[in-house]
Length: 400
Image (tube, rainbow, N blue to C red; front, side, top):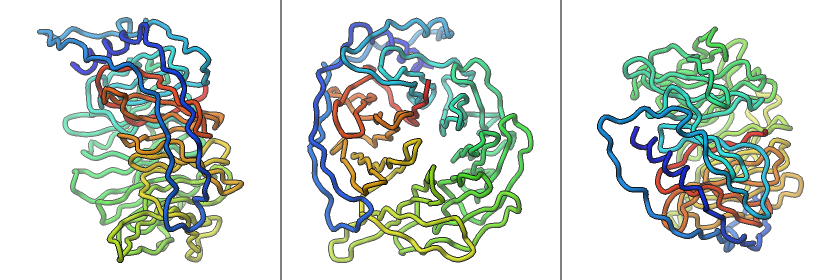
């Protein structure tokens, strides 16, 4: 609850905070899909806002109740010469969901019933109207909840009573969610599915592994893919699991799975090690998935110390992020722009609905995590939050 009070103070501190002048880093073009021996270096500067101190420490006894009326009226800021469409959502301090207008003019908590508890796995429905997340259930259980974008109507949709629930994946039609779950944190995971209205919960497959991850759907919504070392496919109608679709290199599981929104292709990272230097890195790879009766040919690209992949809505651009950098890959021309270099945090980038801008997380000059925005060409960096403390995770961007 203390972190929620701090966020209220942080949001009120928006008054009078104006973003700094834009900086325009010079983009560097290169091909992420072509094998390379070294990555191009760029100097992607970020705006440096005026440092702000933390709010005074205050521990009320007893702690007061915070209601939606306490946090809804936040003074408006209109950054000069800056526009962005849509709304950003993210988890603040691990225990609250925040709604942020994309131009930075308005920010508020959404009043879900789980404020102040451990939240994770925030994900938006395909139509952008609903938010799913994982929060405490009964006792030590973790459960899935779905709320509207204003946090006014929230319902519990899973009823497993399990200690581990993660990797939420909306079916493309928005009618159901697939997820991973296990009865205890150290027991093998199973793949489950549940309807968005909370009915029809059932297991799809149980595997003798505690390391399942990266659950994604194909475009048709009749098959999903996951990593359990190599990558496998699961048929929704039969619950049959395919043979391994990828071959392991011996240096870790394939990871970072994401499905193309315009083609039957699955993108992922494949870990490697350079025996001469001892360097470990990942290869951006993809496989065709229209047919999985035979092991597909893996198509390899550039080596990167990468962590995450995401597509623009039209599938024309691919966001590739590492622990401190971001690239935007043009899928038509196989060229990429590095839009962030040497950041201080994992950026968790998100495309705008029209694919023209990218929001990401980085520390400000005072070392406090904030949300920044930049064009997909790497121009016009802008800070759009001005918190005085706290963490930011699970950043997503929705239209409207």
